[in-house]
Length: 257
Image (cartoon, rainbow, N blue to C red; front, side, top):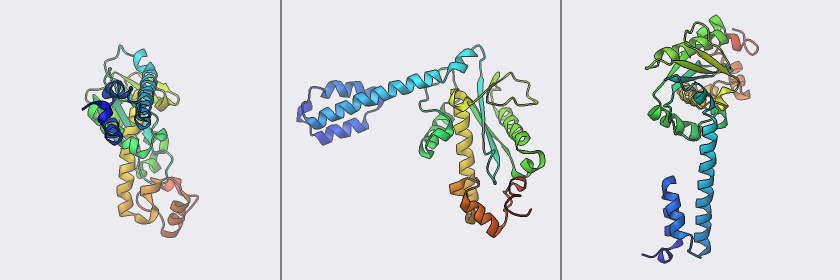
C-alpha cells in the first residue's frame, strides 16, 4: 500500500508504536505526504529525535566522573534517601553500572516523576552490574543519630555488592570505616550517572516500603507523605501518638516521647 493511501489515523498509530530506531524510517516514508495531519506527525517525529539526541548528550555529560576514573573496573555510585522524615528508615543505594551504560533519563531522583523513577528502577535492576540497598531503622537512627545511621546504611549497601567496587562516587559525603577509595561529589546525584542511579534505586525502594507501612498504619498517610512531616502527618501524630516506625528523636517537638 502506498504511504498516501494510508489513513492519517493509521499513520498516527505507526508513529506512536515506533521505537526510536524506527523514527528515521518513519520520517523518510511520510515526509512527502502533503496531508496536514501527516506533516504534523512527521514534525513530531523530528522533535522526538531531537529530544532523544539532547538526552543522549545530557547523559554523556553525566559520565564525566565515570570517565575520569575509568581506570577502575567497578565504579560504584552511592546515595541515600530518607534523612529528613519523621518516620521510616534511612535507605542507601549502591549501584555499579557497566562502562557502556546506555540508560537514558537518569537524574537526581527528586527531579523525576514517580512513574519515571519506577520505570528506571526496573531498567537499572536489569542493566546494572550490581546494585544493593542498605537500611538503618528508626531505632538505630535514634540510638546513634541520623548521620551515623546513614553511614551504616551505606556501608551495608556496599557490603552487599558482588562484585565489590574499586572506587566509590558518593553524594557529598565521605563514608568512615570504608577502605575503598572515595570521591565525594556535591550534588552528585545530578552530576554523576552512577550516583543518580543509586539515588533512584534507594528512593523507589524506600517509597515502596512506606506504601507497605501505610497499610499497617493508615492514619498517618505514609503512602503519600513517605514519612515526611506534612501537616496531615503531624496532625495524625498528635491525635494517635507515634507508631513503632517513628523516629523518637525527630518528633520531640510535636509529641511527648
